[in-house]
Amino acid sequence: MNDSKKITSALISVFSKDGLEPIVKKLHEQNVKIYSTGGTEKFINDLGIEVIAVEDITDYPSILGGRVKTLHPKVFGGILNRQDHEGDVAEMSQYNIPQIDAVIVDLYPFEKTVASGASEAEIIEKIDIGGISLIRAAAKNFKDTICVSSVDDYAEFLELISTKNGEISLKDRKRFAAKSFNNSSNYDTAIFNYFNSEEKLPAYKISQTNGQELRYGENPHQKGYFFGNFDEMFTKLHGKELSYNNLLDVDAAVNLMNEFKGEAPTFAILKHNNACGIAQRETVQQAYMAALAGDPVSAFGGILISNVQIDEPTAKEINDLFCEVIIAPSFSVSAQEILESKKNRILLIQKEIELPETTVRTCLNGVLVQDKDMVTDSAAILTYATNNKPNSTELEDLWFASKICKHTKSNTIVLAKGKQLCASGTGQTSRVDALRQAIEKAKSFNFNLEGAVMASDAFFPFPDCVEIAHKAGITAVIQPGGSIKDQLSIDYCNEHQMAMVFTGTRHFKH
Image (cartoon, rainbow, N blue to C red; front, side, top):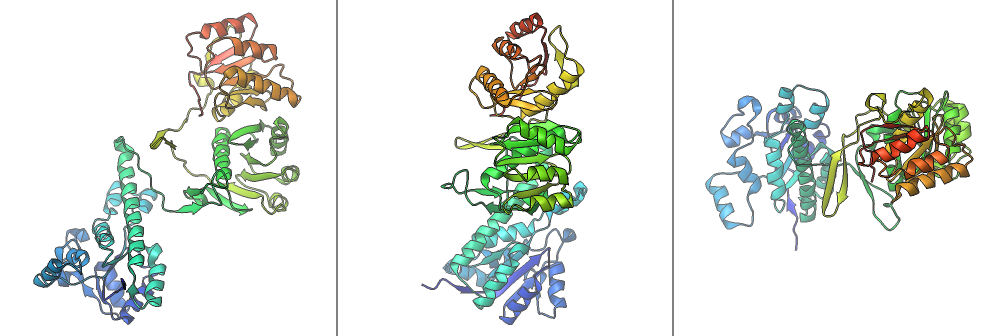
């Protein structure tokens, strides 16, 4: 069965004319009757190609400043009629409705207008009405009509009509219909999210049209995709393609390092979304070496990130380590040359962009959406729970540890000293186990915990953790507080001259 249909007529009404000229010329060459409106009509006329104004078939002018041009039964009847339906064929003849086999539309750039910081009045005028209606009508009637709904599809459509002499198969028409509904739903989502930024209706809509297929998902037997604008956030200088797991680690690294934006040189090494080493020093080289000392074993194959430019001395040190990804605001020329000596090593320059303020994850047969944890613990929110107050060095270490703790999988305990991560206990079902894991790990890498500090992502319901910490040499503790048994931990700290501060903010990370 031959399901191909030859294009005999086309309605063209686009915002962007880029790439349109060869399409118009090819349609004209194939004796296709062309209908158009406004600026597109003028564009086609200027090419010296005959075009019929939509007003000539509707007997109605463009009105309301161009807001209403194509919204007319003769236009939509020409698109939506079913060519194998006897009643439709009769009505087409009765009302003198012209057949339209192809619709080429490119919508007003709503998202670009919003991103440009335009006024509300300008943004509202970029909500396309006629164009979106034409797309829906033509895509719905894909059995008889082909819909080209974006400038991104011009080249593919041109190749299609050129190689098949205007004969379009049902398979191709249906594929373009899918593209069209993808474009229209994405457009509507952008408009809704613009309005809902103020209204805050209990609805969550997300639309990403630039999906990238990854080598595989979390494991080789799983398919994986990334939907987002990676190039908007990073400049990739070197290395292989990022994997699903790489992207998760990069996300964790960026979120962690955002806590140290604008501070002294800070370097972190992450593995499985958790920091295995992080330190802040006077130079980036010193920060890297101190971060590496936190866990040189786990650093193998890790994700590295710096909050300042990576220079040549630091690059020479890093080059001895096998690592997957290195992220920084910039690399010196010599540092880049050194780090590019490993073919697969990925180098990323992080750009300054606004990140989403919500987090999303699948759950059961739906999704969970929440505000991102934007609270960073600081002196302004601290409550001094114990008689003994932390000294200035301990306070700085407590803030340092709390930032790491916020970005470490719960249940977690973080131990730090001298603005260096000594160890953390991550993802444990018991906070006591998390603390014991951290202490054991710190000792295995020869850290002296005398004078170290401890951060916890949630309160202590019993004094067991502060007791274990005290016996390991830890002198100051930062935690949310809020347990009905807080006083038990406070009493132990007071009895043993430990300092403990409450933040009032829990930082669970499941």
